[in-house]
Image 1 (cartoon, one colour):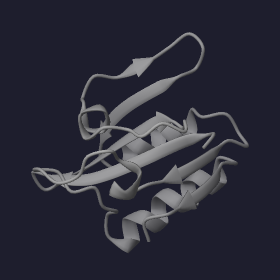
Image 2 (cartoon, helix red, strand yellow):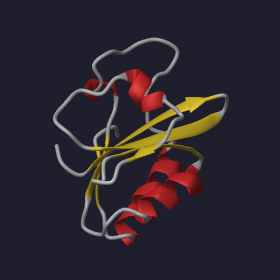
Image 3 (cartoon, rainbow, N blue to C red):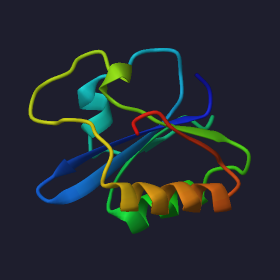
Length: 112
């Protein structure tokens, strides 16, 4: 998979989002839920944010024309535990999807 992978989950009544550079390798829950952001010089990213405005800010920084795939636990090597990857309510999904498209991103929601 190329482009970027977006993961989301609810924790403490807040929606968390992580965007990771898309690769063919399986991601771990620890990697997805880590609050340590990583951006390499060659463009590999792993960024965790909380809230709709924050994920919109991250999406707005991606290069136009990039693909973003909103993923669920099927894309993760280990499942279960305290975090359940899921998409937020449809209204929030629509806001994020519309914003991504306004930014010129090829946005694919594989969760809904």
